Image (cartoon, rainbow, N blue to C red; front, side, top):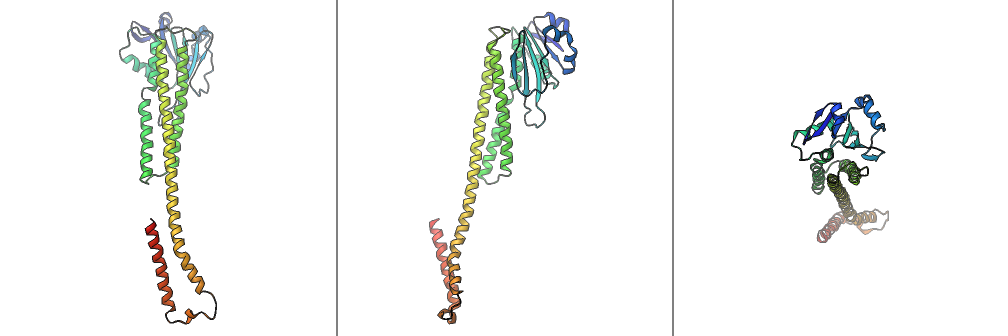
Length: 301
């Protein structure tokens, strides 16, 4: 699919018209790109697009080549990956996911800025990749807050498993924003002089926006670590409570154990053994010992 940008309008066109117009965007699937021999031969566009794993932008003699590796939010399915070329006044996308097509439709459905150019389109496209990320990061923060509240209420279940999933997601988004920041700064540097001076400032704006998102993910990472420390502290408090109970039981039964051991000795001359009140006396003495221990514990607590 070929699109021309003319008179603040971006619309679909033919390949012949696309090549003539000053500003244009082309969208191919991998199959269509393999068949676009003329365009690939004209610009020597033969870069490897296999196993795209991160966002990057590379400079070549007459063009820029880049890839996007966009994490799917809240989904464990494969991430969205596609490649693109930046030529002078031209953009070429090779995408099998449908994301680029949806972005183009969303951008062209609204009113375009005055003096719209391919640089402006690229900026709008980049912004469309992150426009809902603030809401997504807020949802992650809300999940962490709920876990913190559950810890204080002692109602948390599978904490380590859930926290591990959140920390992985935060780390994944942090790496993504780091790569996008580098990509935006590379566009701002305008090494190939493809972009006008009035338009490259938009790439600086994009890089700053992504940097702020990266900062938000760093805050979330620290927040998650703090909540995990709270959980570990709560576990420690629970263990201390258990040890406190065990200690109290041990202290109560220690004198009773001494009493039992004392009168369990096999000596012949023990007056209490033949005393008629010996057994009741031991019972009363045991009750007194337990009562004194409980009174001391209550007073100390």
